[in-house]
Image (cartoon, rainbow, N blue to C red; front, side, top):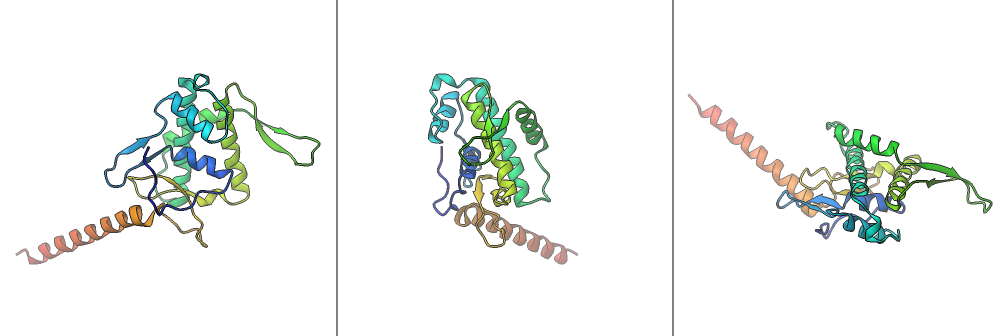
Length: 206
């Protein structure tokens, strides 16, 4: 899987960094417009889970788990895109699929005597589904502490990587200025020049 640009923004703070990491198991190459899929197989998903601290063997992950993880990933990507540009049409299909999957992931409120307070815990059948449930619970908690709106998807349509916006007024739109920001500015320049040339041709026409 390709690495983000060298000047990409810093990762989101825990525990949102795990959600960002899941979204970024796929993002596009700005130079070619092609995407790199980091979850091509159940073994890829098992490896990602281990990297995020979930001890799971390859044999414990099956095809349905991979489908669930991808559905959560693309649904979250669609939700994060709204944080960057609320006027753009939402990916309704991805959000609907996320709702369907989320309805089958179980979370419950747990209490203990240690004084840590109430917490959301997964209660599901497989390690992957438990992890996905935990990630969705993270989104709910992040919305309450106002960090959720700072996790965004890059506005560059050939990228769509998740990034955490640390700007004072939460105004960041690209994950990388050198790659995605520069590509957007170049595209805008070309479009302005094309419009200017078209206007000149119309003015010169008899």
